[in-house]
Image 1 (tube, rainbow, N blue to C red):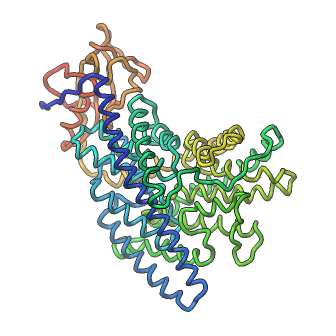
Image 2: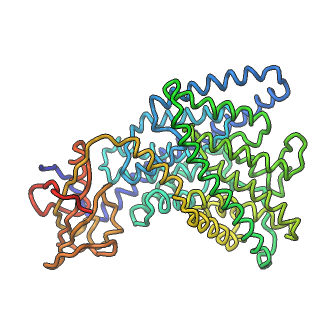
Image 3: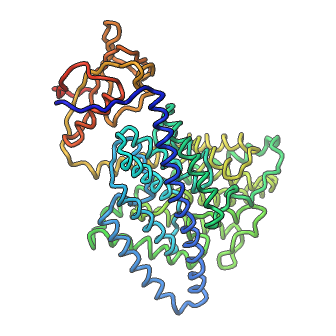
Length: 544
């Protein structure tokens, strides 16, 4: 089989191309995600208003549940026709950045945009951060298609768009970039850094220009917290250790509940599966009538926990500890139901809200045990990061996120301790990274096309992407494996540390379907340099 190979040019040209397309992606994603988050804010404020009306006028509550019933059917119907937008969208975006999942961006972008806003409008426990990542990634996908870039550059653009989406949602550029390295690609390469950097910078500039026009602030997300306590009080580390341990154990329980719910909802088949939406919609509406703190993503709830705020709105006149316990339990149940049913809404900020609520509750307990109450705000932030890290297994993103959301570095060391405890507890219970686990399930659902193994002998060309790099530092096409390396007449089996030099010949193999075989061959050739032989032979034995 012969394939037409487009010239790539040298690394400098390639780097300039990544910067240029990253900037365009950032502008596109920054504009769309800024508009999305402004609308999400309006939807949440409106839903709080009309739920307040129903609390004051119980006679009209049946109308609310009738609307929730209709809303569940609408969202179920959308998911039936566009199943790619189920859940938060983060696993799907990660699959696109790794080249293992493809979707029609012009369907996914408007569908996720409208559907997730609708769930927020209906008063569900729905965040905007996860959908922001998918919307940003779809913007990168779309920019790549319009510019007719190859699949390798498209993966960088999806990465840049996803990072830009998260950065705009939180107004946290470093968090967006950390997401690229730790979650999207799970590796650091110059190209990943450049695409993330250029996209995030232009997206944040766009957000800050448009933000004042649409009601979004340009400062830190959480300004009600005070971190004035003395960081030299080493007794506080004991309280951090205890609180982090308890928080991590609850996070592990939450993790297993998520997948248990997903399994149970998978068995619900009535109305072609759309009926499963009734459960999270109706339960979410009922819980929102109990307390406003379970509505939306949880920004307002987290802010209300800070010592500079007016405090958390009491549930039925309960004391603070009881109110916190009720909110945590209800928020946890709703998040589990949303993910289990596949409601198109974010669970990123709801997880942080659960962690913050646990931090406030454990802060009350630690204060009774003798901890200085001035440390409570610090403990809340640490528990947020701990809960997130235990479930998602992204410790660097967790640490960078809470520092950037507060713009305070005084609690960095105890935060690292808390995150480390959460990560280790997750390992003890053998939890896998949440979004990786969800992506595995999505890929299993999309299997169907017959795959075959293809092998290529390629010569590393001077100036190519692979030349002068270790095997692990090259962004290979999805599924590609480097089986053999011929260097100065010697044939070796390479590992991740093996350096590729101009003139070397590599034998690459990968599993692909007939539809994408030509693209697979082209991308390997673009990455390495040129074919060492005229024809590409199909592997007779599976190479692992």
